[in-house]
Length: 181
Image 1 (cartoon, rainbow, N blue to C red):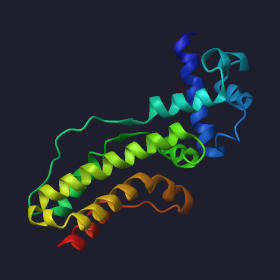
Image 2: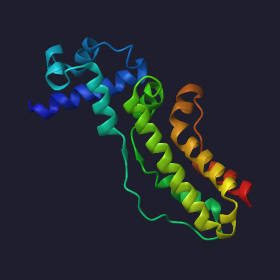
Image 3: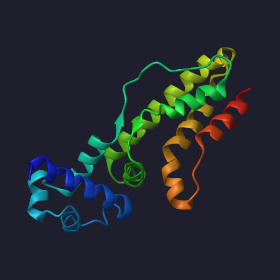
Image 4: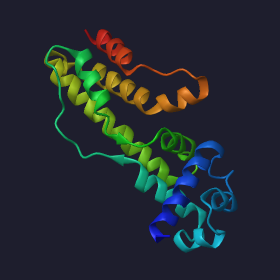
């Protein structure tokens, strides 16, 4: 067995368990059992359980570097749809649940979630400004629209898990676009 495989199995098991039970509700012995490794193996890679959470957040939630926004001048709906499809957050649904669940009690998780939200709001605000140049003077409305759009995109996995309802990003894009014109 390759060493990397053990570490990956530990992180895979922790991701599944933290998403379902939470960090506090998941003993390292349960992580070891699901990962099919000795409990000592976890300590070899992660001296403290918090190190497992930090590694998950650092390695499995990635904010892509800012790139050009693909705005459609005059078409807010198309611009927001494109933005939703180009979401800069690369994280599984379970990692998104972990981010929201653990942000209240773990500073590094809160910091990552804050950065993700800030990046999404910034991109949405910029895209809306490009798509609706005349609205640039109405910065407050664009800010609210961008923040709403970002919140829905970030929170949709949690809402789906809680209610079973999937939010259609295209419908959200259309709703926000209509509110701005």
